[in-house]
Length: 238
Ligand code: 5RP
Image (cartoon, rainbow, N blue to C red):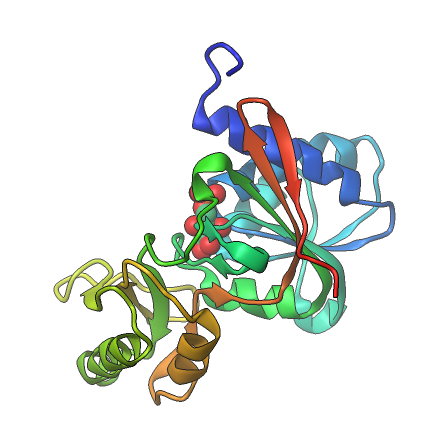
């Protein structure tokens, strides 16, 4: 291990490595979270030096940081299509299956990633797992009847063979966390998600679920900061 290297150093190294994917003239999606913030911070000097980009942000927080650093942020409805999105993740599992939404931005993150030709994930080594689910799966739900919706989510997790299905409303009932789109986040402690595709399908069928933090078959590469340098994970080619 490089002396004194911290998790934050690993995040920054992954963010720096992502600059390799950024080309002049690109339409670029900017992720949310501390690793994505590193990316915005390392990108800003390039933009200041003349790199021409059109960017779209996945959260109000990221948009504010980008603008503060001199990066112009456009609206996805204006740009329509992106070349690349660089974003963090809470877990990176086999086949680049991801859990995202720890920062509460999963809905916009998924909309932006889906509008991008390519999504590159940046993360520290602790995010890489053999089975998704140790990190509670964030599910964005509409406020109306969210308790009922959370019960349906727990049932879906149980039917999908998850290790457990404990639900928690982020922020608690008295002060629920609100997403940029005005919804709530239900965090599902599943412990292990043996079949993410099945759980994703079941969650998408529940009325009241806006979206979930399973990002499957979306990323083309993960750049993982490790004590020995940045490791690139790519999904197997078929
Ligand atoms: C926000 C996200 C983040 O990408 C995820 O939570 C990782 O965050 P960090 O880079 O701070 O570890 O999905 O909704």
